[in-house]
Amino acid sequence: MPAPADLGIEVLSVPEGAPVELDLRLEAVMEGVLVTGTASAVLEGECARCLEPIRDDLEVTFQELFVYDDIRDSAEAEEDDEVSMLQDDLVDLEPLLRDAVVLALPFQPLCQDDCPGLCPECGVRLADEPGHRHEAAIDPRWAALTELRQDPTD
Ligand SMILES: [Zn+2]
Ligand SMILES: [Zn+2]
Image (cartoon, rainbow, N blue to C red; front, top):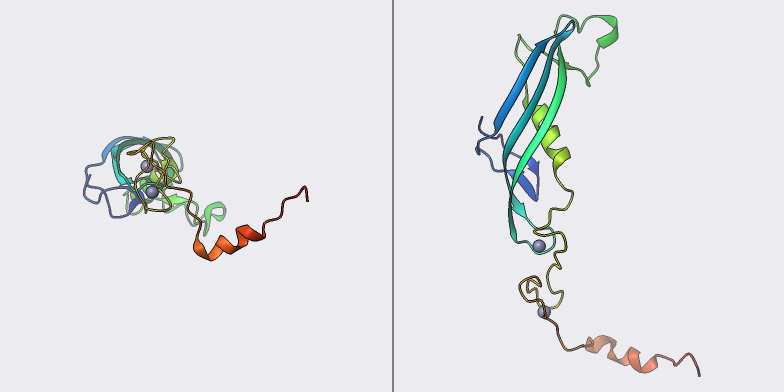
């Protein structure tokens, strides 16, 4: 199926319309249909530290019981938003897929585990220039303070 919009998080997601491959097993159980599946897709995003584009493969598994909607009226399942319902004999996989994908994503995606990020002074990507550094410059607004610094042995 083509990926729905916003499948993922802001910095890392499955591009809208990109193919999502689903491998599903549907089992009839007493209360409804038990859906077990795997979804695989590509991810695109950017490194949270250096903004380098990231492209990765994603594979998630999920399982959910979709309850027959005529059971909804029974006392135990009433008004429970946590229960997934079959709707006119159809299963809406999108919320399930969305939750599984979001849970599988790193909170802060990185281009490499030890990405050093960007130079705070000039913004150069430090992974590209390992030896990058600046002369130890002191903001002129703070320079006067260094003269006030006391020697603790005084
Ligand atoms: Zn990075
Ligand atoms: Zn720099």
